[in-house]
Length: 376
Image (tube, rainbow, N blue to C red; front, side):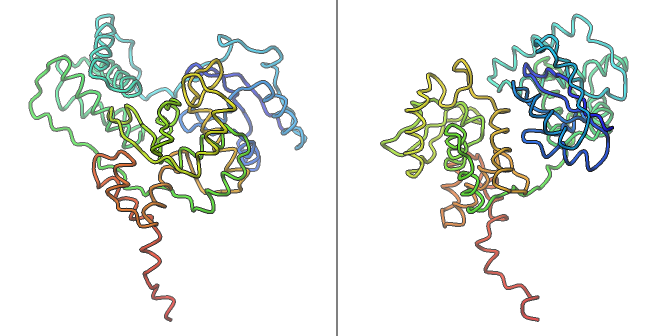
């Protein structure tokens, strides 16, 4: 009999359920079909955000197939300390831990970055890659940092392990900031950055957006998704909003300290106002517009799960994320004739070149092109 094993996991201060199954495509497809289940490319495992009824729901779901479900690890509700910790795959070269002086140095580097007011995510990334680089030159007995040693690290730990282009750029940026922090002068410091992937954004049609909102019945979930789309927000911006940032009289939303630490105003849809007012009256948020338990900021993990469940209910099979709603907002504005300079301001883009990418996915101009096949 096929066995499905459920194990508790603890990652980034959140509880998850690790779903272990056989490497059979039929089984894998069935596991993926359960609402909320994701596949981690990094950790090569299926996982689900832990909630009280999850184990029972998973048990019934897999038993429908006649599979044995091993949930021994959940016979008693695990405490955070009892959840296993997800570990990233081991790198190809064994690295020693940082020596004490370098550990202290990374702490100082973190404070230096924080004083420059980088975002928490950027600080974490820069410190992480710098610590990895310091461990690398430690094991290689490199006494002096040079452009060559950085290039060597770049090849061994990024190119060889097939990290993404964006991660590679983050690594180079982090190490360069560390060099600036240390006041190190490097001759010929012209490290070649990889060209960014020229990927077009995924966009949903207006009908798909309408269906998505129609099947989302929960008031908070519907309001959140509607706001992200109608204002073209990044999810971090939406979850950082406070009720006072909504200007009902002027029909504007004040986005504060967004990407690049910039403030901007974006549109408050007149059609969204009744839904938003109903939401405010029902939930009465204390600090953030969207709150989780104990009035804490609603998490991005929860928001992603909301979208995933709504996509399943709507029967939308195309790949979509919360950022897809922002892409769709911009594309639909462009297709309705809005000047691209206004779209740039609404999205908070520094350069019009960033906004111009939506001209490649807009169907307005494409529809005017006569396909030669049609005249055969």
